[in-house]
Image 1 (cartoon, rainbow, N blue to C red):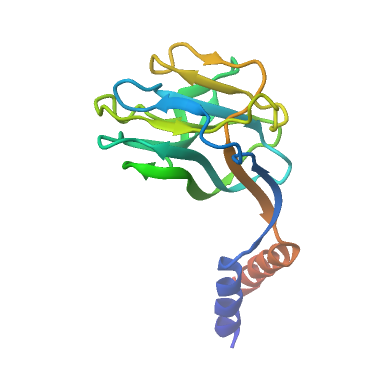
Image 2 (cartoon, helix red, strand yellow; image 1 turned 180 degrees about the vertical axis):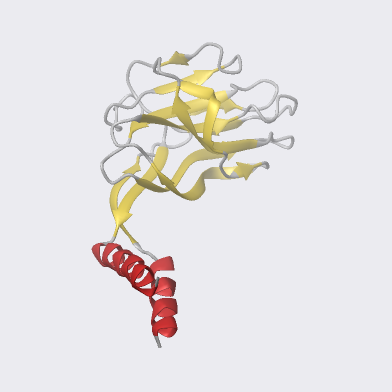
Length: 201
């Protein structure tokens, strides 16, 4: 009987749900920025954000459009900050969803995860074009036109593999970022599962 209870509690704990708490979604500005990826586009488009207290990153994405008949391979990554206010190409925290192919419309490419952020630290959502420096096509994306829609965030890009960076004083790239905390019931369930395991020992 105890074994059956333990299995039931552990199974319920494994299906932990999260209560969404913070969502940044500023990609409703249309296809209004230039090329990224391939032989002629920028190598990296990076948007920073400061991790909130609800620190489990569950989903993030950036928008792509076009690409052409020879669209390059890119990925939507999460990078650490290099300590100098730039994305760190040598510290890729999540190698995210890859895309290669033409997109007729502006499309958000999402990466789903369950990554614990450190509240107050700076992170970067990145369109990573370093995978493909050969293809002749390139993508377009979106930015907020200088509105500064992401608190404490900045937008940058690099045309030389991250050696140097360019940016705009005002404005942010279009990104989707969703962070969460475990739902209260899920936290209680996880605690119960741990207590059950201890009692069995």
